[in-house]
Image 1 (cartoon, rainbow, N blue to C red):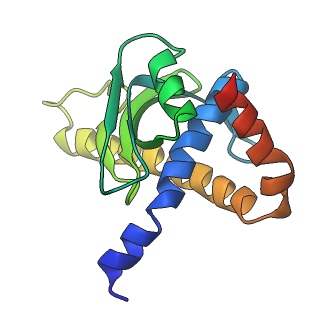
Image 2: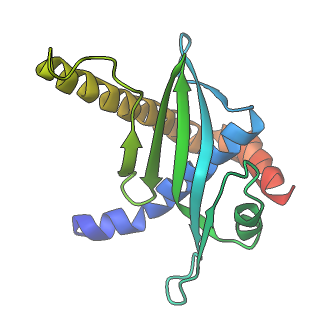
Image 3: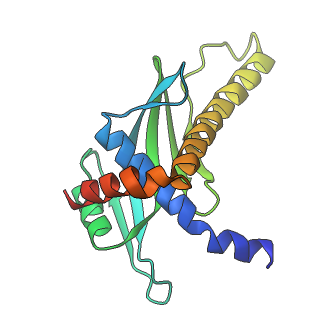
Length: 172
């Protein structure tokens, strides 16, 4: 099996992860522990795209807006559509990141980092390194959340607790 087919066949992990992130942020008031020492606040931002699972008759629902409830997107979930792309806001202490993730490779489609308080004229290299650090921080957070998701997804806890809670959330 070539790498492209493998990625395509495992795309459901990305879709489940994006849905799980949405569920966790919504059901835990946005607060998710990354580890024993750090908690982040994460919210679905202003855009979410859902697609039908059937690739022969692709249907796409694009929901945009400031409504935190995303009622149309929730309705699409109830109808069996899967999250294929979602925008998120992440807060770590007083800093805010905004980014969009896709389902296939968990690519960052966009990423807006916290504002950098360095003077470009005085320290152009420092500006570059600070921006790089902030981008890496967003990647680190998503990696830790994905690892957390995978650990739950492959454990007995998924079928026993997590999946029923997620399904109940979708239906409400």
